[in-house]
Image (cartoon, rainbow, N blue to C red; front, side, top):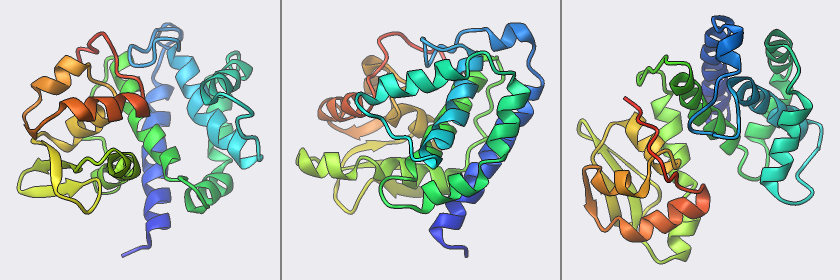
Length: 228
């Protein structure tokens, strides 16, 4: 079994390959279409985002202030680039991406961001596919991002149960157990569901305090994405 950094890079590369293959099939109208999960962005902007973030971090460019403003500035700097040029740049960043994923700090969140945005993109262009997800890397990694906030709030683990398997955010008794597919769990904990949709998911425990944790991580949407 490969070590975790290699698993992360392999999962990132596989996800990137699916995204680049999908973008090759998009028309100019597709590229200017809105992304419901990221309402300030078009499809082109979303592609610019997933390329510009590792490019900037790899060059030592970190947010000087608010992260959201920094990310938006990166998107705007590439807004007029051809998608083919963006893809070519992205494929040239392997060394930087591997360094970020393996480096100090939450480098694995670069992969989480990409994996979540793959399905934002699929939803935007009408190409949903719940099977396209590196579950064995993505689900443990995205749940682990909530370990510290949950501990600090005195809450139990977020647990996902599906088909006889169990994943937990950290080593603790479960406080909120989701009985959903891994794909649905990833969408739920990454703020792609409204508070009411989260309440309606099959679950055990008290969801209410967890809504605050999720909203602090990424603001919960107020309007449903109506994902199939």
